[in-house]
Amino acid sequence: MLERMTLIDAGAALGISPDAVRMRIRRGMMQGEKDEEGRWLVWVDTEQAEHERLARQANERADEREPEPGEPVEPTMGELRMTIAVLEARLEALEEVREERDFLRKQVDTLVFAQGMAAQKALPNPARRSWWARLVGGSA
Image 1 (spheres, rainbow, N blue to C red):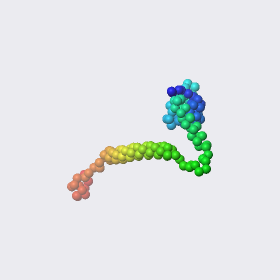
Image 2 (image 1 turned 90 degrees about the vertical axis):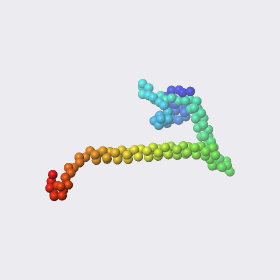
Image 3 (image 1 turned 45 degrees about the vertical axis):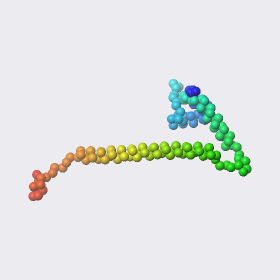
Image 4 (image 1 turned 30 degrees about the vertical axis):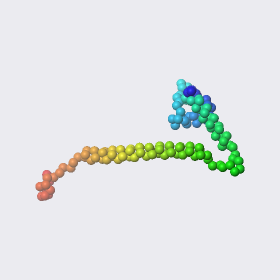
């Protein structure tokens, strides 16, 4: 359920600082608006926030736990799969950005060429002497 909250309340609901909420607004990860008094009000999905907060607490507790002697300290398969999924998503995003960059680069090259051609056409043509004047060296 979406609720409108102040930065402080949103930070408490999400388990993060008000500055972190402000940064999420800047990055476009959260929606927010200023009220008449200039305070930020953000929309927070309270159910999702509760799930994220509980998951974060569980991860913190798991990180704090010391491994027992002989227990492997390596990441689990689930963690590795999650890391792979994140990296694949980043790779796809990079490929899209590269394709867009190449497309824009071609457009810029075409526009620069067209602009050069237009500038060349805009220059006045020098008066050309007739073949007879060139042959005898006279001006005309």
